Image (cartoon, rainbow, N blue to C red; front, side, top):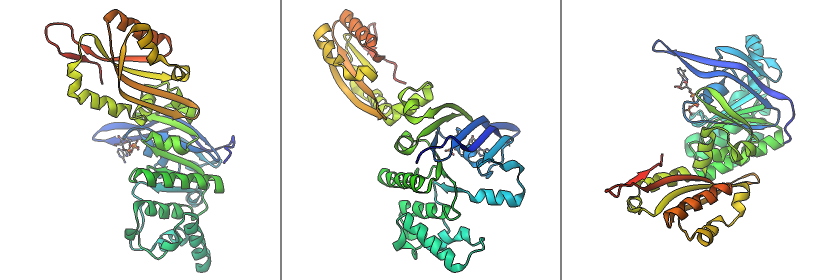
Length: 364
Ligand SMILES: Nc1ncnc2c1ncn2[C@@H]1O[C@H](COP(=O)(O)OP(=O)(O)OP(=O)(O)O)[C@@H](O)[C@H]1O
């Protein structure tokens, strides 16, 4: 759905400090975050970055130590308990482990949030059935959670989170326990709900694929702070922070390939006229035949150990890990040639000079 220029979530200077063992831990540190109505906003970071703590301030499941939490124009910290309860109903939440009631049927789980509403039993039932239909689980209304797969359980949790017609859905690692195909199905469902119901989705994850597949905007979090944010394609196509770059690299399986190459004994046989290189191509550089130019212009041979392309919106980032071999002057000239053509070149390993034929590596 179209994102409106109207913040539905407005966190101003929000901090959460925990006291443990006589020490203060700044789980969230003076964060400002505005999320517009209709957006699908992803927050990415490694474990412990503060993502859960931050999103839990949106419905005051976690009260901030300082700052303002304004949701739908209302300053939540200033509301009476009754008004806060009403405001919270407009913020649905789903979790990694679904949090379903095992003693209740699927239908019973979806009806549960409506029990405190003053609506008739028939209307409550009709609403729950409608929601189960929306998430594609009508046939399972009399089943119990333990009879369902992980993906189905998450669909029940999504239906339940929609019972009070929320404006915002907060997803706390909702796909982390699911396999890739089921993850994809759940993300598509969230996208469909965003488009059909105009639901604003705020999701946290440690996986870039999740962000790439449905989010319009992203914030990268580290040590309680947002270190980079913006349009998903812009942030990931041109990361300004090393951590953001790490997410892009691991999404392209580069991190894994580097670890494998490091562990590989074949690396030990690098000879003095060989260089192990990590090349990153972006923009124009992905469209040129630079590797074959190395052979023609510098008589160098390139043995490709790993190749991949990460597509982010209309930008491609190419990754190559190669062993380049040739005479040392030409190796230096060839590497220079690549750099001059906009390729990011990292020398991963070279034979160590001296008596021993050890390999010196830069793979981190
Ligand atoms: N109730 C609490 N009391 C004390 N420390 C806490 C509490 N909740 C979270 N923390 C700490 O705050 C920091 C941020 O935790 P948080 O769960 O928000 O991170 P996260 O990015 O969501 O990571 P994860 O994905 O592992 O949950 C961590 O160091 C965590 O141990």
